[in-house]
Image 1 (cartoon, helix red, strand yellow):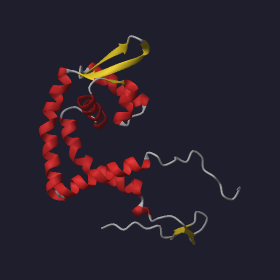
Image 2 (tube, helix red, strand yellow):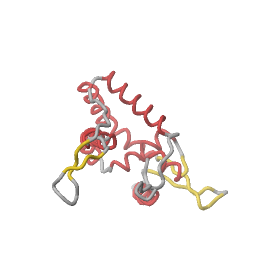
Image 3 (cartoon, helix red, strand yellow):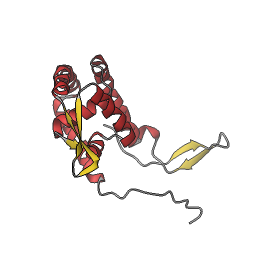
Image 4 (cartoon, one colour):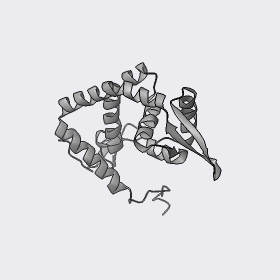
Amino acid sequence: MVRCTNEVRKMPTPKSSKTATVPIRDFSRSLPMSLLRARESVMRHFRPSLRAHGLTEQQWRILRALTSHGEVEVTELAGIAYLLGPSLSRILRDLETRRLIKRRLVKSDLRRSMVMITAKGLQLIDAVAPSSEAIYAEIARRFGASKLGDLQEMLHLLESSLLTMPVATEIIDESEA
């Protein structure tokens, strides 16, 4: 089991080969890096299937989000799929060209648009689903179905607990304080 620690590490200083004592956890214990490594370990198994069906990870996230949430406003979709607006606009244009999604303007506010998955998009979901479920089954077999469920629950709890944590908006230089 990985042990979390805030122990002080000696790190090389930029100006010399001497080491300095800095109060930061070891890079291997960095939560963002651990999450990125885990994500990459998982996604490398899904990417070939997505590529075989002509999809990028981001396109797949949008199609899956629309399958789960139905018709949604574009701004809401960006939040659901964790995509920035400019990227989402390009991806939606590509999916619309392929007739996998359909967009319509909101009559009461023509600046807003709604997006929904089409029958062709649902057919693509159906085509990818067996491969996706087979990958999930293999992950569950190797890692353990119970541990996988526990991991998903813990990640949900982590996300929920951090929603109310204030986000630092500026870096304070303590030498100037």
